Image 1 (cartoon, one colour):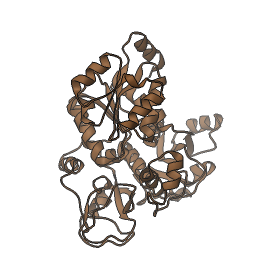
Image 2 (cartoon, rainbow, N blue to C red):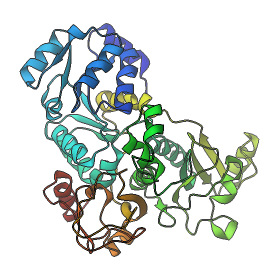
Image 3 (spheres, helix red, strand yellow):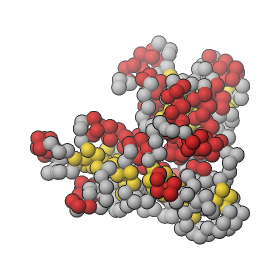
Image 4 (cartoon, rainbow, N blue to C red):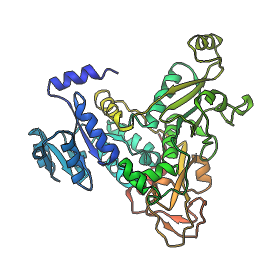
Length: 429
């Protein structure tokens, strides 16, 4: 896609893309800085439960504070944009209602908020870009279907692992390769016992939310990311939780291949991760049945085959997210869209849970997520990770035990639960 020249022309004509943002944490605030530097795209409206965060973020990009308007009124917000000002609000629903906002980025990481924001945007036929992959793996197929019907784009963001994995997958598939495995590097071993308390000091030092860091460390984030990849491609986890071995790049095309050829995979077409020195890279293991292409792969120094490693040595997270905004607004294209629940992320108890307890958010001290195929999760009556926050324990659960409909009851008043019910009842896509 041509981005730069077209955006430059749009900016010169005073017709740039107006982006909105929900959630001005580490990822969201970084996005604001990136779009401030880009031609033809700028984040002009920001929602956060603490309005001081988006105000200070905008000021830190060089915007005078007197150009930032805090309001919860659509009319006042539109007036501010027309006057060349910026809008901050606590009301996330405001962004979907604003005609001047071209696309909204959801970056809270909370499934309840993400589901509501995406729904509101689609109802108002507004493009929505999800930096909230937790929501996508829970209700993404339904949101994607509704967006198509409404004539707008629902997409997971560019730059995060699902986006760059899907890019490698599309490239390989387009060129006629078989994708045997698609995966990512994880920059630390999984610590299933990680909690916001145990991660607090490290999180503060990195400018992160401790709960978010705990979700990375306990593996929930990796499971969510690769479930999004699975649901967008049809590739599956080989085993619950994936293998997750410490494998280095030079070994990829001899390890992430079928067992009968010396690898670890019991099936072809898997999602996977490694704790080797790989992060922030993503990879695809590909092959072909054409001898001439094998010849050419050797000629271009891709090895002797028959399996080859395609590697993208970086993903830039929120820094690349604006590319998803541009694709949605200018081209009507999505980066990653779940069409079906091929995989599910389900919760496992981090500690013993007693009857009557209400469990907290993802990344808290109560549970972590693991990926498994959707049929496997359904057969075990597992609760989807995204509807677990706020659920009530109805039978004692031992540490390491799966949370299911037999020992946990979800909060049925939550919007994400209701949307998941609609998704489960529908025939998708």
